[in-house]
Image (cartoon, rainbow, N blue to C red; front, side, top):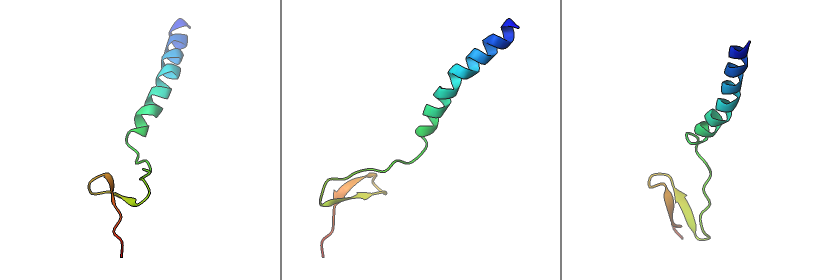
Length: 51
C-alpha cells in the first residue's frame, strides 16, 4: 500500500514538469516593434520593407 502511495506521489509531482518541458518545443508568437516584422529565417525582428 505504501508503494502505491509513493508511486502516485511521484507521478503527480512529475506531471507538471513534463508539461513545462513540452512548452519549450512549441513555437510561440513573437511581437516586434512597430515598423518591423518577424523573420523566421533569422528568428528575429527586421525592418519592414516599404514600397
